[in-house]
Length: 259
Image 1: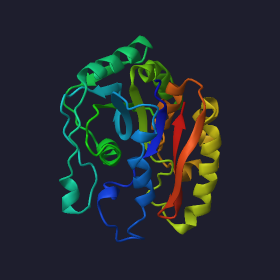
Image 2: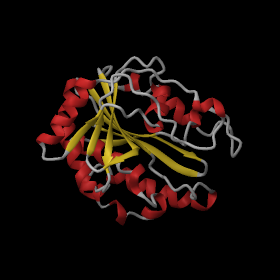
Image 3: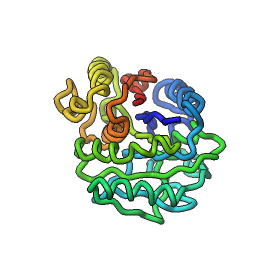
């Protein structure tokens, strides 16, 4: 069966695996619960997962092709145990090659990297969603321009994977202002979230995200929003809807499904 595509919140660092001292310790519990049911909610179990994370940018679209990727603990100042987290899912070199070929065939320069591991935008949410680590995972970079049209085009090029049993996941945050997690931003985050919930149904509107209310407050830099463009492009116009929402650390966050 054709897989949908997803844009998911990957949280703050290793947030699902620690107790927080700022705010309630259960702040991320609803997000974790939703991620925990992600695979079961799909039309069928995917044969592989392709993740586009907001934590990897490259001059050309770059796909990790390691058979056993290592983990990149690219967060700072967290408890020691969070730098010992493990996620042992296999890579998928053949799928990585397929991703590169599809992008290249669409005229989008693409390369493989056989050495890069998975950043926390990949392994932190998938460790919750896939605790047995028993589905192969491949990571694709963003292109450094973060251009919405380019990333929508990349998604369209990758759309055939959905009929090949591959789940395409954009991993970022619908609100990502490191200084904007406070009650002063609650209403602004709700307004931006309401706009995003409408815009996901229209790729042209989504590409004009900077026109949204409070756009640059939501994303002073858009690397955590850019994965949604790939997910939306891969849907090729199929319906989109919000599948999860919560208010965490005083701001609204959401997940979206396409197709």
